[in-house]
Amino acid sequence: VSSIFLSLFVLLHAAATAVGAFSLSSFPSLLPSTYTIHEVPIDQSSQDNTQSTTSIGERIKNGESIIQIEDIVTPDECKYIIEDVLRHDAEPTTLEKPGLVRLPTRAAAERASAANIPCAAPLSADVDNLLHVILKRTASVMTEQIPSISEVLFDGESVCRLLDTEQLKFSSREPAINIYTPGGEFLAHKDAQAITVLIPLSCPEQFQGGGTSFWSQDSRGHRVEDPTIIIKPSAGTAMLFGGCVTHAGVSVEEGTRVVFVASFSCATEVSPVILEHRDIYGDSL
Image (cartoon, rainbow, N blue to C red; front, side, top):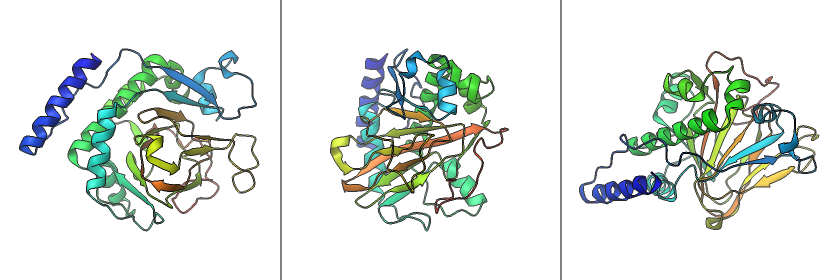
């Protein structure tokens, strides 16, 4: 299936170059039947979580682990998205500092506009469609290979079904593409949703600095302690973690780092994180 999909992608991309139109709407939402999954304890000094009596869903909810899904986005998809978003040379809004631009999907831009939240111009229709395919692909892995995510974080509901029936609520201006250039960073925050999907699309060799930093639940806080762990996975690897986890986008020193992010909960669920106060991005700390 994977080789057929890749061949179809190459053929359609070549045709788009010739005629100036490229549709992704008919792409299959799944590639391999299964994906390689790794669990990374946020506190590296803790015991091996694979020996834990709790489920992966519980460990995500409790902020103990980050789940990595390898190759959820193909190299061709990464390349296509990066080339498209960098072509538009978007400007940051008043919510971002220099060096960071957040480009929302079209639905996210509509929600931001309705709430009078400053928002950059939305992504192109092609990239918007492709990101929906990628999110559906990730939701399928959650539902089929990590069922405890649905059981614990979504009251037993299939994440795929919730996505298909528009019963998920997303963080402000998400799903989105974040573009980091030199000096760009995302300050420490909590997403206050059931789960966050964060997928780097740039290879670690394409930038210096960068990555995502995380603080363990027993940390005294990002204002006092250095991050517990910093992760720079390969391009196309999804990271899943809970809304109670303090994390940050590490400042990029050189090059460009592009990531896809979507934080969400059941539309009917009260935010699982108590909002004590918010940083400049509107996220809780």
